[in-house]
Length: 267
Image 1 (cartoon, rainbow, N blue to C red):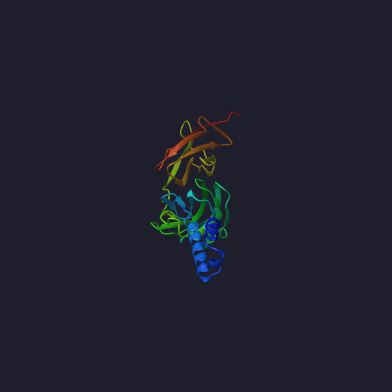
Image 2 (spheres, helix red, strand yellow; image 1 turned 90 degrees about the vertical axis):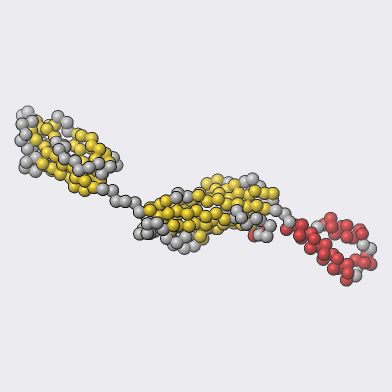
């Protein structure tokens, strides 16, 4: 713009520059200069990805990446992402790129917008992780659509709009309740006599423990055991030792006949 005004002063005499026509022409020169400034190009883009499915009550993690495809710097980059229906806000973190400042709803809020602002130069990218929680009880098949938008208001009219928003869609699936079965057996001597009051411990792969005590005929039983898992079954008695005190079981169906053979301690 300063070059245009210098040329204007050099080309026109002082007497002409004092006239009203000169004022209009000078304004026209300013408009040309302003149009040159607005002609600077900027192409901001955003992508968002997430899991295709999620269970009601679980979290969805979104990866959001904004990029500056140039050729101009963006000093007022703004990322906006509103909390969609059937979810609540959990967290927003920046993973990489030039530092942005983020504001967000309170954890657990069902509405509100995450806004992150910063500056990004050509070829740079910035990545964020947004976590939302799917409301418990959300119907199976519900589609959660979450939209991220990026813009720089200074380049609002010159930034192509085709890649300034990205939508990730996640379908809510109902996690089937695991089938349960029973595990049973008998504690007895080698001759087949039942041994009572033996503690049987059933431990799953996560260390969760259940106990049962053999009855007067030596029988024990565990109900509502989750199928499709591995368990360790252990027998402990005060008056008996067992040739195989622990057994590893892969439980898929009703399981009977998990027996323990005991011998009395020598006194």
